[in-house]
Length: 100
Image 1 (cartoon, rainbow, N blue to C red):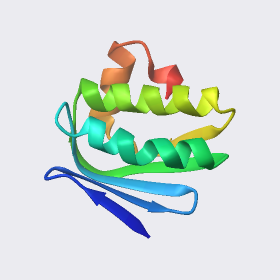
Image 2 (cartoon, rainbow, N blue to C red):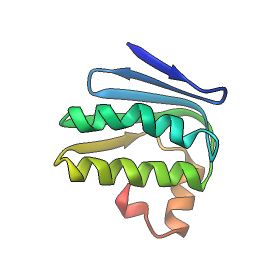
Image 3 (spheres, one colour):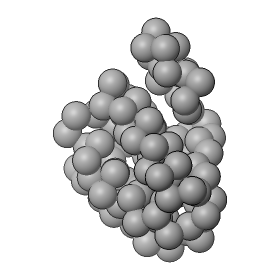
């Protein structure tokens, strides 16, 4: 298992599965994307578990949308599990819930 850490976010990567934990915000979303990008580009199907995200804002939502777009570009699939309720509410308000 590979792990990338920022003071506020951790991304653990295993075959076809990634688990994010900590804070997903403007300071950490880029770190998460930099770790997730090669996984999404190389794996035909990736599950991203957000169950250990303690706090997320619109940058976290943008990360989810970017992951979906990156997967589509590569004709791959990304599924999110355990999306925090606050992030789902933000996606609904921003009218992008159907994208994630």
